[in-house]
Image 1 (cartoon, rainbow, N blue to C red):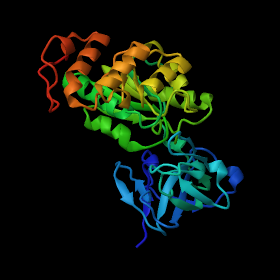
Image 2 (spheres, helix red, strand yellow):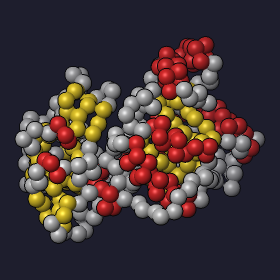
Image 3 (cartoon, rainbow, N blue to C red):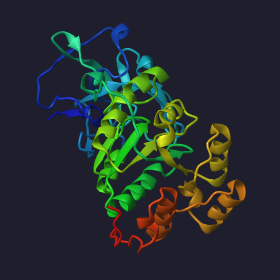
Length: 355
């Protein structure tokens, strides 16, 4: 039996509760953020799985249909592609979250990506349905929440685990912390892990109506401002922001940091190796407060980080380092409750309360 699976990039939509129609549109009418239906075909690999709206991975087979969205991707370690490169309706799943387009460059060490065929756009009353139809809206502007900003040297550099640890420490101290991913390519499981780590609420650019932030800077800023204002109105104590990809990739990391402005209280760089940490600092022109990620896997790596950049490094993957990370956050965020009392234990508990 075939199935129609709503990918997580469509989680903000109402396709599970309200009817819709499907209509094939000429490619001249296609655009970033369009919701479309595609049919799975080809020889299955381990990448023939789709992230559902709850973040769970669901295996798919030829003949199944996927509801996803058109967009662009330029991942340094995996693949580059766009809906603009789709030819004769044949495309790929650019991410497991349902970002759809066609790869033009693909890492040779990865299994074959999922192949799909365009079947049509989702329409209602003759008009195509887009992600912007369900985006968070706000007529107000403004953002003033103290923010921990996590950037990386590349994808898979340790940004998400760093964000989880920060959410865990702050929430265990009785603080209200929100988790947010402002740039990257849509995938729900990263930001969902912030929720499991203690974030009261979680958001990402999908909530702002973007399948990825590989868009024009003006479009990115217009979409992200209502999201930041929405967060502001909830008055969290802190927001932990992950910037997907690296600042030097075309995902608007610089624009995101500019929108956050002076509210950035701390910048953490998750780095793949000590030399990459120095490279991002020099090329992007931002000096982080801390290095995490594989660049801190061993004492030798931490020592090299210090030698090259004169910056501290903490291997946050190792739960034994949580007291040190807690101390760092307490000092950087001026939270004496994190520095004056017993540190977080290895099970995630804490004797300290800030609120």
